Length: 159
Image 1 (cartoon, one colour):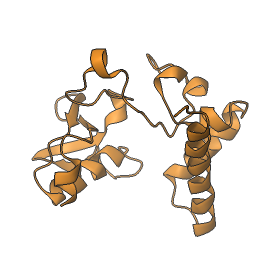
Image 2 (tube, one colour):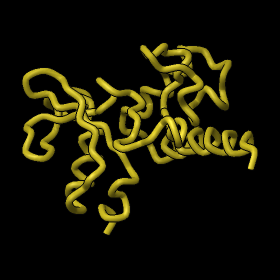
Image 3 (cartoon, one colour):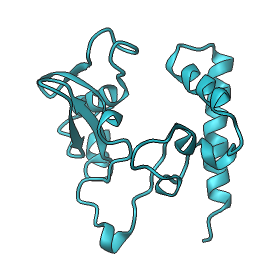
Image 4 (cartoon, helix red, strand yellow):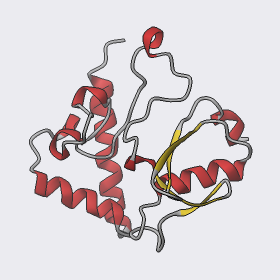
């Protein structure tokens, strides 16, 4: 019942590639398979992690990572005026890569939090490691980096 528990609580950004790139934000999952297809589509990097422009999603022949159009999308139905900015996680070093329209303050958890002085070269090496199949030890190192980012963010919160 994962799709039912995620419905309305998780927004997945997918880029439709048929006839040009356009953004699709999905939060109404019809089945477990629909949820899995959305997660696979948002993880697909054309010609890098998949051999084509994307993967099938909801009858569309090519869907891929939603970051092409909406790097940190606002969840569907989110009331920014009354609820404030939604909680966001970014696996990339926002300030070093200079994403258009994205400021460090727009992202809650990212490598900027724990390693603000890491060089762009070092960061890009980590980012590329996440895109290439790694050994179990390297995957544990990457997981630990994400864990440390989240832990640092939590320690800085006032409850």
